[in-house]
Amino acid sequence: MSGRAQLMWDEAVTGYDFGPDHPMDPVRLALTRKLVGAFGLDREVDVVAAKPAGESTLRLVHREDYIEAVKAASADPAAADQSYGLGTLDDPAFAGMHEVSALIAGQSVGAADAVWRGEALHAVNFAGGLHHAMPGGASGFCIYNDAALAIARLLELGAERVAYIDVDVHHGDGVQAAFWEDPRVLTISLHEHPRTLFPQTGWPEETGADVAEGSAVNVALPAGTGDAGWLRAFHAVVPELLAEFRPQVVVSQHGADTHFEDPLAHLAVSLDAQRAVQVACHDLAHEYADGKWVALGGGGTPWWTSCPGRGRIWWGSRRGGRWSRRR
Image (cartoon, rainbow, N blue to C red; front, side, top):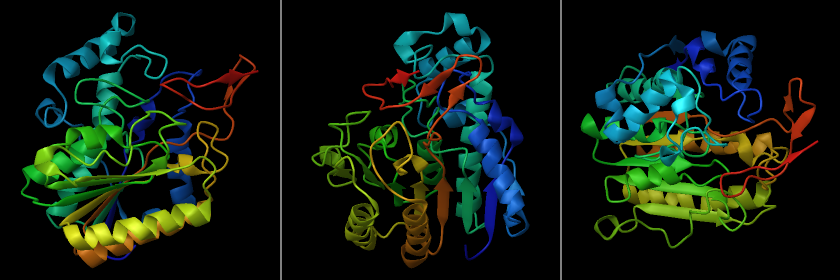
């Protein structure tokens, strides 16, 4: 990275834990933080913990009734209201769910604050990128949509053009939905084709509401796409869009589940290609947004996740909000 950078980190984010039978294990966050330390990267950036997102901030994207439903499920997981997507296979309720979800959201909002106010040129929250959460419901392992909240905070602070680049294997449906009618936000998503993967959205013809036509761009890639096709799609689409849109800030989501060993999807991308896109997002931020860049994590499960004491291995593809389990 060039320029001043912040890493947003609070160890308490590892409390975002749907339980031992769930493929999204928070150990991935703890191990990532240890890897940062092992490489000495935390000596090159400022490590900062932001406060949890408060209710007024959460309401920038999420409906009040949904926030209240999350708080109720957090206090009593057995009473989770499934009409809000809570207490489901994808999003089981757990004690403290509201608090830790708001903490993760707070790190992304804090990153946006720091970048917009000039306290940092770049800011990273690898615990974030929970891009499936909708204004009125949980979805796809996501309770609060920290990516959308970071963008909403930038708009609240005065940003007039924010570009969102999502290279997670799944469509960034929650962020697209949050800004479907807002021409100030350009959402670009490269993802596996909705015919073969959750959430079955992100078709090329999804281009934004009439009042914001062209503000949503979806590049749906066929199952099996590898490095060459994935990188070609990115470089053929993203730079030209940013050159035309001229964003003041770039927000990017870097889900690792495009990797060829991820069991819940069907792309075949390597770590080298993922790094190449991260570098490209950094360079594009400098070219078109004076370097202002907020980078988030996203999806990604290890190629196998054994469930303690159960003798199970998660393996296969999640379709329609479900995944397959094999012994």
